[in-house]
Figure (tube, rainbow, N blue to C red):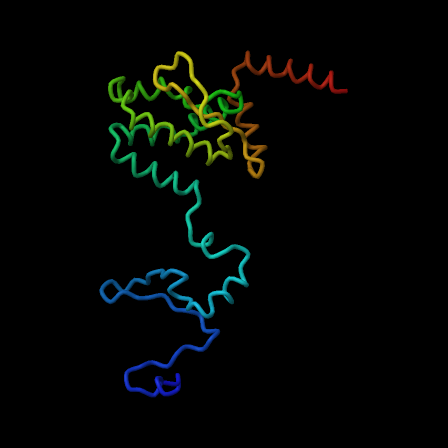
Length: 210
């Protein structure tokens, strides 16, 4: 049957024009607009036309990034892991963000910098559970990714750490936009003695590079 004939049938709306924008579905009960998927809105015959007008394939447009998935998982675990809410709220404070970034810049596993604090908050018995240690490692990853870091080595042995046997090393992402801010926050976090040592090191480095 031709589209014109179908459109003439009683109760059957005419097909939308080819270039018409799809409208979101409205639920009957709540009246709120739902966001339908792209595949639902776009028939197969015009999907290629839609993709040709975008820089990224549709799978990338509708999927969640790795960082967002890690953040979502950490939020879910914070409600199920014993003491998870305490860790989640504490490790994301500015002081701990700076400390984890500082440890990463020093080339040490940042998870080790938080071991003592985690035990202090929930107790050693809870902290020794595998699911809790996994959660803390995930929180460290989320915080550092938000601060512009990425994993450089996933498993580095930690010696004499009260909580972790291994931990990941991190490096600043090359595409991070907050490089200057991170460097300033790192320098601000140095103690007076560390600042003096850093100053002496930089003077020596600049002198030898001339």
